[in-house]
Amino acid sequence: MATDNVVTLVGNITDEPELRFTPGGAAVANFTVAVNRRFRNQDGSWDDKLDGFFRCSCWRDMAENASESLHKGSRVVVTGRLQQRSWDDNDGNKRSTIEVQVDEVGPSLRWATAQITKVRRDKGSQGGAQPSGGGDWSNQGGGQGGDSWNQAGQSSGAPVGSPQQNSGGLPQQNSGGDDW
Image (cartoon, rainbow, N blue to C red):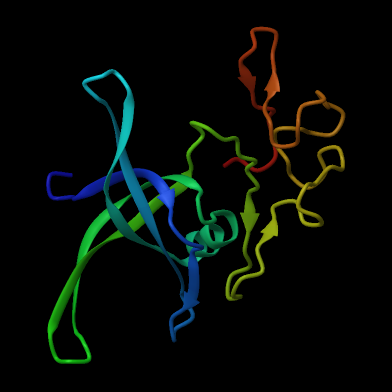
């Protein structure tokens, strides 16, 4: 990876992600992440300094998932590659920008919690994300539909999608079902 330009950003989304589709049908979601740096002042108090705004682009299934899951103000962790884009504006001036082509994005769990729902999309269709078990999104029906964490007859009282706990307090994945 000597030639890769991988970046990791942690910050807040400044506006709702914008989902659109290319003429070829590929989904793309664009959003901007504001990155702040926290530092201690000479008097011992903490202060935040804006490091910058970074325009990010997600493609295909990730674009649809991001536009459904992330919102203005969401604190996110983004990894991706920097890409320079150039164009001529309406006055004929050359313009350029550096954007992040997102490889992975997710909510930051530093000050929040998240509930993860695995989605399945039918090949050849646009949108229409479905939960992996079919039916409703929460799949509260006792493990039907391929929920490998909570198989039928093994209810732990834990929320759906949470790993079963063994006697040592460590997550224990049940055999069978869909693996992530």
